Image 1 (tube, rainbow over the protein chains, first blue to last red):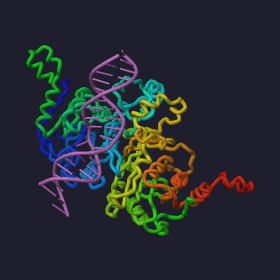
Image 2 (image 1 turned 180 degrees about the vertical axis):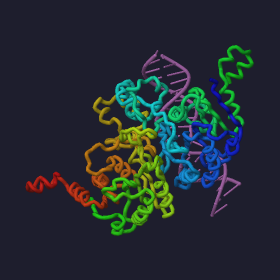
Image 3 (image 1 turned 90 degrees about the vertical axis):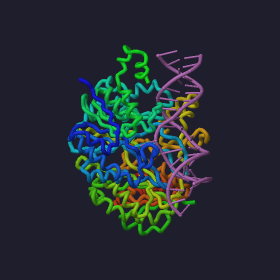
Image 4 (image 1 turned 45 degrees about the vertical axis):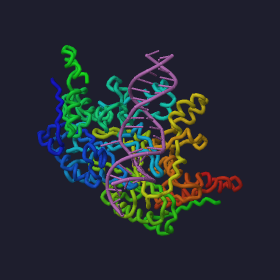
Length: 285
Length: 285
DNA sequence: AGCTCTTATGAATCATTGA
DNA sequence: GTCAATGATTCATAAGAGC
């Protein structure tokens, strides 16, 4: 079966109209935070954030399947020495819209941004809010099991001293490329805290989250041939991960350059081997 | 100078009247969560939680010094498959009361309670909400610095095995015995995520937080001879830590047994050596 | 392959300066 | 006075080079 990956250029406030009701199994996205990156997205002010986002979440509620899940990655910024309250106000408003606020996962960032201020420490965590349409939803817990403490004990001997000291609890994070290779009897269920590093690669999108983040939620809330939606696609991390995991995906972004770039990278690489030079260059870019 | 540790038996809603204005440097407490421990505290329903807590926070706002800090350890429970919103509503209400919501620290629990549910993972984190009266408050950041990664990398190899083991797992959360002995250039400021284990001791109080938790905030927000208040004292962890760190402390609890127990344990142990048998027993209990 | 060393950089925050 | 732009500050991690 062919795995689809559709990229739509446009504003999620209008583009989501195109999607049919009850057609998406998982929405996972990281919208622009309030007052951030105003050069690209227009910069939503904290006090206007809920009003800006609610029409979008209303559409998401429509296109999501009854047993589907919506994961929202967000963090409030500091305004005048206080944490903004717009995320809390958004949660309260989305519940009135009909969403269930099922859970709040924490992304504990191993390598957060440096800095020093007189009355504040470095911010090392973000929210991963889970919303659902119904109390019953699909959750494939076995797909994200992590190696047990025993594994960590034996394996940790081979790690550097730094690793031992700074991070001696590998269980509970739930990440790793080779999770599927571990045997069931050696695995445990993870917690609602995700301990992983921010991406350090040279992504052109200024706020790309690490691949392991959508990967974990796609694994947890979908199966093969399900459909994943990211209404703020950005550099396309969610779509690439979904394709690799054999899930259909839909991405929406308002920036033409992102859409072009993602479309290009989504094309299969293999055919290039049999095509003339000039085409090969385009595929390789 | 004598370090005071006062224990008041009674309800914080009325007992706090006894304390003068602007007299406390730090409030750190873990109140009964909604609908928890109803056998002891009466069990506050989630929808009534803010109304129940607001008179107390109003008193705390009064007794706190202008440059003081209020740390509130709390986590919403799950009600009907959803996270309750009473913590968010409390934050919004306290801001209207005059509090500044300066920061939200995360307590990342290394060893959280085991268990398995069909649509939920283990809860491995709690909120540590920081409130202040003013934008300017006392914060002694140097007191909680942690060794740097590079330091661990290069220097630890030269330490003995004993030293390695003894210092294990203290890094990253700002805890440890000899932090003050390390040179300034080898230390880094911590983040707003506290990675520490839940206490495994056989405390009689059902919700005792680990000593390192109040210790960290006492170190960060007070100096010696300052005053720390815990309006929900419980087993008295905050008071014991404060006394050990040479801070005055005030504890309030509605349960007579807790008050008696804490008063007993706060008495110095040395005099028992010169007292008759029956008194010694009481001190030792 | 392993190990060490170097380097770039990531949804930051505050104080100050300028419009 | 309010708002916007700039500079100073800072550290864990991944990736890559070199041996």
